[in-house]
Amino acid sequence: QVQLVESGGGLVQPGGSLRLSCAASGHSLSLYAIGWFRQAPGKEREGVSSMGLSDGPIHYADSVKGRFTISRDDAKNTGYLQMHNLKPEDTAIYYCAATTSWIYGLVPSQYDYWGQGTQVTVSS
Image (cartoon, rainbow, N blue to C red; front, side, top):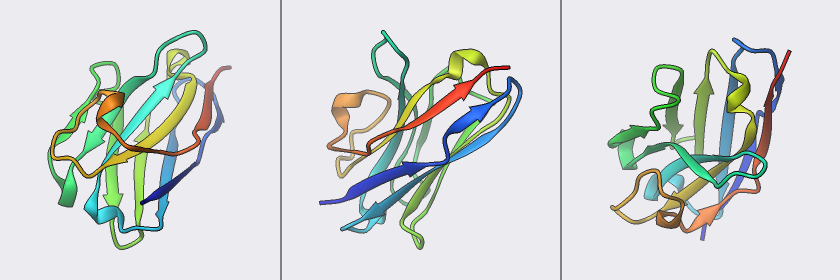
């Protein structure tokens, strides 16, 4: 099975940018659809973006459309989430997830494998 490790989180001012990485090991990431999720304190985990195999269909939550971009580099076994124009409401722990299923999207239960998360804080 695949293991996932996120990195790239941190503290950024409103309007700033961050790029999160999701490094996979144990199995080729090319076999998995990937998703990014986030969870703020006291809130449920929500889907941010997802991408299928071989740059397949991409989904974004309405709240991040036009600001976030998901991508993958299967040669590096790594997925990415580029985030621009960050807002305080984007503050959360961000998780990457993977599934071999052809049915994937922004629902956490669709994914089988999860990273440990990386904290993103947007504050002045």
